[in-house]
Length: 121
Image 1 (cartoon, one colour):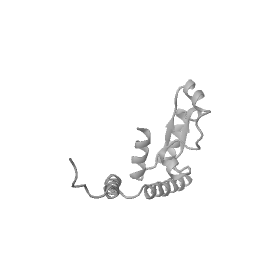
Image 2 (image 1 turned 120 degrees about the vertical axis):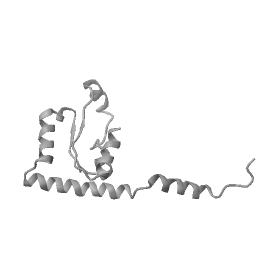
Image 3 (image 1 turned 60 degrees about the vertical axis):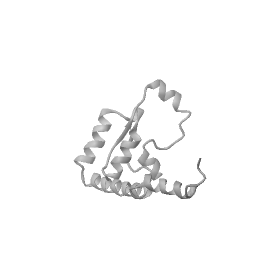
């Protein structure tokens, strides 16, 4: 559901900070298996860091507060960062395509299957 939430937020064009933290045991077991630079769907789709990710030990209350404050009450430098993030979110929107993906997929499947056969028994 976190992937869905970040995509919905991206589609709204709203800046965000993504945080993930799992138990220490889960982190130790997963670390050798996970071979990705990013965890958020937004960054994965973009193929680059569009939104900040605070993962495991980088996710602290202080770091989250700092990131959130810079988005909400930013300095001129932070405002540039927010503008860049919004441009990145627009890129993600474009990569996802226009609304109506389910309908387009259903139409394509129907086209590939062809017209219904009159031999149905």
